[in-house]
Length: 621
Image (cartoon, rainbow, N blue to C red; front, side, top):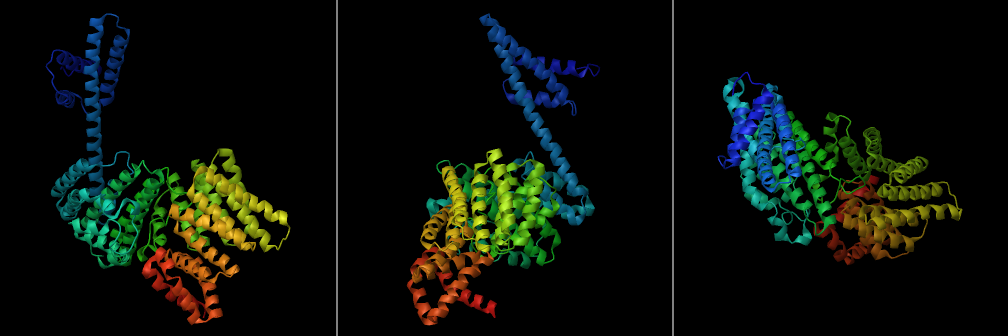
């Protein structure tokens, strides 16, 4: 074609030429069409070509729709089919050129970064939250482009080449691990799917350790399988090369994405699917925050920053899912010593994220988790920030959730009037917006707050408590109607605790049993521990001492394991019993309840009970 030809004329002629060749049978594959587009469409002029193609498509469709003559309609259909082939090839051209441009941008970002920020720049390019997350083929091309750039930059050749090798190593390791992505689930039985369990016996970690050919990934999987500290592992490997962290990043990213995709497809059990997908996001976020902590202790700032960045990427991806937990469950499917201080590090990456809807949701999750640990001031700060951001972003569900959490945290701080105010605002907004889950929680919080306020003021009027209990009942009924087990757990637990406070132990036991069952189904260890603690108190009120011991031990152990300061409540009750009976009699009662306790927390948990009681006593001295 002549260079003097206008671009619209040139591209219209190209389209016509391809259509004519197709009708004459001279084009036998889509690849021929694609090559023609690659050769003829100049960079930066794609919009003109696309406009020309759209005009031809509309005209061809009109002829098909208007054609009355059968022969003319048949030809029009053939022309339209040829144009659709061009359209498909054009879409492929756009995708590949976009990938090429992105790849060039990523390479330039790594090359232009300071030496101690190259890893950070590379990990940002691997972020799955990008509009077009890089697949295996794109990553292979990215590694090649980086390696080529390294050869052209002698001053940075070694560091850039190492990052490229990290990408290649990560992809190679993933290909080895991919066949074992889900096989562990069938080995341990579908009814037991989860990441928790006794060291070395549950979850995928030991299986993956045996298959991994990346040294650091193998060591990490073994540490998790044996319930060893991730932070200590990272601290001891503080001299890890950046390429080794890139390798691990890709391995874990593909494992996480593969598991979430698999769990999301469990259509036979949508509730289990949601719980398992949530646990997967949180498990991998916890792993990376643990690594960040360890590298920070080793003063390997570049590695620590990289791990924090990946933690944030995972949480942002999770926050965009419809099943992101606004009301509870962060501890679902988690056990082990290495998780206990995780929340101290999860908030670190948020200092680098501007006020967005994702940030509000992540802050919400961290806020209620901090409340579970008894860190009420930090919890309030997180929820107040999340409330402001959610309101600005127009995320009404998140706004209501944070009002509810602020209410609950205010109760924990014994500021009952403020708790009532927050729950009232949550109730009004939830009714206005039709957020039934938020409404169920607001009703529960409203009634819960009123019970404690009346109790503190020593108000004895029956109507005060009747009104408060009515709100709690409404919340429970609404959560049951929604089949929302997390909200059911909160509402039933609130009713049970209110009954304990009002010295109605028999009613309390009924509601707390329901709350415990719902919390176990939802996988919320905090609410499980709280229910056991108050069940123990209710049994103590009716002098069923054996059950007081077993449930008190379970509540104390579970709450202590997740780092909640509320483990001290059942520990205090058990210490009183021990003082009343004497150590020998208490030990006999404990031994009699051994099987019931082991059924929930295992032999190691049972053996730890006496040590916990001694820990509590030492804290009183």
